Length: 305
Ligand code: AR6
Ligand code: MG
Image 1 (cartoon, rainbow, N blue to C red):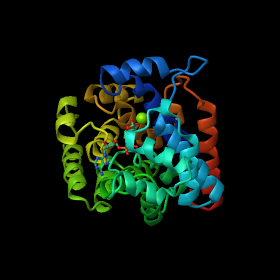
Image 2 (image 1 turned 180 degrees about the horizontal axis):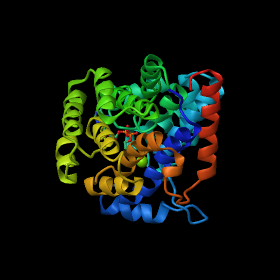
Image 3 (image 1 turned 120 degrees about the vertical axis):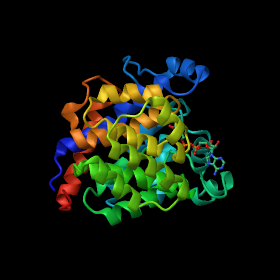
Image 4 (image 1 turned 60 degrees about the vertical axis):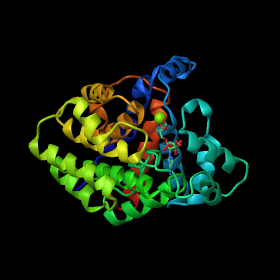
């Protein structure tokens, strides 16, 4: 299978568009009011949040180190931290401690002894698929390793595996039923598997579920177990729809709209390529495409695409 460079731009820009266009709809009234103040660049473009920021950090770290170096990654996450990007509360505390010189391994344990189960490691996991588009074993190893820097809880880690595997399958143009079977094979946590089994049933049935059913059965929260299967289902069930319809569906599901849109956007964009995405200008659109191009060239150089 030859992965086109357009799939790389589609994946990374799909993630950033989902994030930037979903952010105004995240959370309740106070969060939306705050984002009305923070959500534009000085040129008036939609700004992205921590989802895209951490994804770009991970991409730059993989490009600079040519492999996953958790210490380098932790340093980049900490350096990029801005409160105005809307980081999850535990991740914000962790990154501030790393910035003050604390080792990320100790800082993460001090906040949650088992690590965070937020979806923060999953939202950046599509980048791992761009790093290794054709090697399933390395994909899972690196997904886990990058997750542990901020989200060591088994559910946080499995969320990252789920999104990375779904993205790799989308890059390879696998049909939805095969994507979900491949995802299932790579998961172990019962809470994740139950939700993915629901997705598999719905994908097999082929009828788009109501947003309210998706919210009730798969979740729409900031925990990995309440959002990763949701994003995978929404992406797979919208492979034959346009990107904008998919984002409208995420808005109807409500909750963590930016991160569910970012994860679904990356999977959808990996499948359809950059030309299928809306031309909407967002913060640093060209920089995002150039990072995607560099990831493609690196993978091509290593004979992976
Ligand atoms: N035990 C108890 N509560 C927990 C645990 C745990 N092990 N892990 C997480 N929580 P965080 P994220 C709760 O901060 O995953 C942003 O909008 C705890 O209340 O690691 O980086 C992003 O864009 C913690 O503060 O966040 C994402 O959409 C919260 O879960 C979203 O937030 C979130 O975990 C999550 O980002
Ligand atoms: Mg976010």
